[in-house]
Image (cartoon, rainbow, N blue to C red; front, top):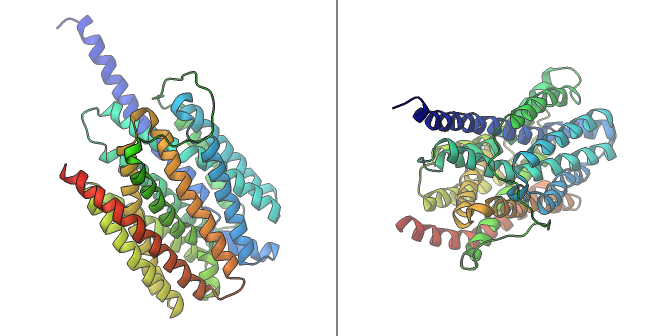
Length: 411
């Protein structure tokens, strides 16, 4: 073979290496940004002490974040399909940096609300875009491989990142100085590194001329019922995650009389760590098994979690958290896999944005209702109703998803 004949092979190999490294760079940026989004979880008790507000204000602050996510998903979460992945991810990192600065310099409840809303804007731009980008980078780096690795890394970066944020923040708050400043400084440094990581990653979408429009779900008509069932499952699964990222610290301090910031961070980490672990363990399982195990463990976990609050018993509560996290993680991976299988390649970002839009509605509305209910009845009673409603929703969506997944597995 002549030297000239080897040039295309060398170029192709170099491009695959760039896409392979870009795959991990985007995974890092995705994980760091999701971790930053959950940093306040173990700090809410400190904010309550500093600014003298109750649990309902905590849910309002959390709702500000979720509203930011939903607004951003609706307006910008799908635009990377024609603007390009990096053109959305780089601004998302910069917006997160702005949110970090706001947390540090604006020391009041309005400042906390604004910072959380800005953080939500960033995450809304991030989730569908980064998931699609990771999938495309993996396909370019390993064209003959299955999508399993990309699915696991994307969902693990998402949920694993959310778990690491509170764990690190809780440890820094418990054992370090300036607990409402140092965690944000640490993550600001990590975010800056993430911005450079995104900038060095190859683009996977050619920019095209296209009139802007807000989010629209583009799914073949015959698959819409299944798509909406996957979105309904995402809503229920994220409602569980919202409970831990907004009110876990308050429940631990109030109902279980545990005031350690490190423990509050650990409780949230257990939930999201279990979610990420379940996705890894079930990575190569059939879709029906992912969904079936996920729904079963999630419903069982809701029972154990509620029992832990009623006894009250910390160990039972944490075991329940691990179960709901593992179940929700497995089921959500099944939801993402379902949507990616239904969407045409050129509409992946848009379809995923719709899934995350529904999921983040679940992250905000049920938790806001939960916080409002605690103004009239005890947290224990509210948790019973919360769990009962989620079980009903899960039972409705599970039947359709499991039936259709079984047919796909046999195909």
